[in-house]
Amino acid sequence: MCCSCTVTTLSVLILRGLGESKLPSVFIAIAAVLNILLDYLFIAVFHMDVEGAALATVLAQGVSFLISLCYLWKNQDRLGFEFKLKNFRLDRQSAVAVIKVSAPMVVYSLVMSIATMFINSNVNVYGVAASAVDGIGSKINMVIVSIVTGVYTGGAAIIGQCFGAGKMQRIRKAYYVAIGLNLLLWAVIGAAMVVFAQPIFSIFTNNPEVLSMAGKFMLVDLVYFLGMSLSTGPYALLDGVAATGLEMVIGIIESLLIKVVCGMIFSQWFGLYGYWLGNSIGALTTPLLTYLYFLSGAWKKRKAALQ
Image (cartoon, rainbow, N blue to C red; front, side, top):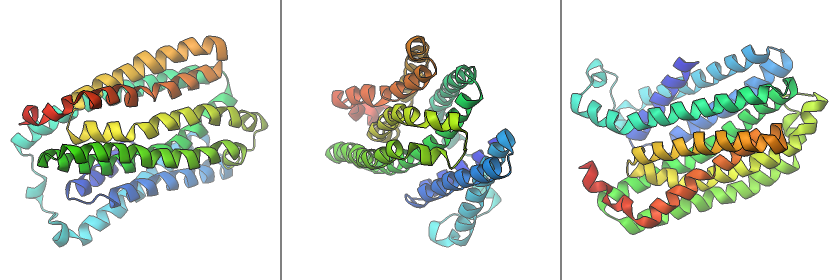
């Protein structure tokens, strides 16, 4: 599974580096939609449970990778990317620069994974139905994250270009447009999530206990979706000016201090839903803290630091 996700991410990053802003999002969306369809096939039809979910992820990521690889192969001349061994050699200077920027993100991803494992392990204590709701919710959130990723990736590319050109006013505009676009999507898709909660969950299971929990879960998840929607501008800004160190710090605060701590506190009053509520409220941390950074104007000084 790790291998399939890695190669898919690699091909998407290569395309973004070559100036393709739309197709990477399409390939990610293909993987997400295919993952959901295969989950239904393997879990609901073939009753493969956890093994089916894992197989669905591997196949979805694999198909997405093959499609992106074929596109790269067929468009070598236009993109200026040749499949030659010399093009895959490590350049020391470039490697050092990449490590400096990416190392904080590795820590960020690790901390996020730990927080997610903590929430999942506590949710599993509440039984099979709770685990099933959590699993279905994760698939729904994959779609949400795909939408957010597509918007903030495009925003990050625009902000990066404007930052390099010194056009700070355009960065402000891109920041707000990214947030506004996703808030519009949040309003439409979020309403559908709440209204059609049970029909959406019934795609994956017909368990009455699981379906009875769908409505409340979607209401809590609506807050998570709001946090992710508000994060599009902040993520685009942090990535566009390569402020990954700050992104790591905010990620640690979000994951450990907000999601985990709030989950533990809220679970005392709301039980199972307290952990999901803590996770949703944690998603609001990044947009709030990054907005303060945005207002401070400190990001304008990043150009000197990068040079």
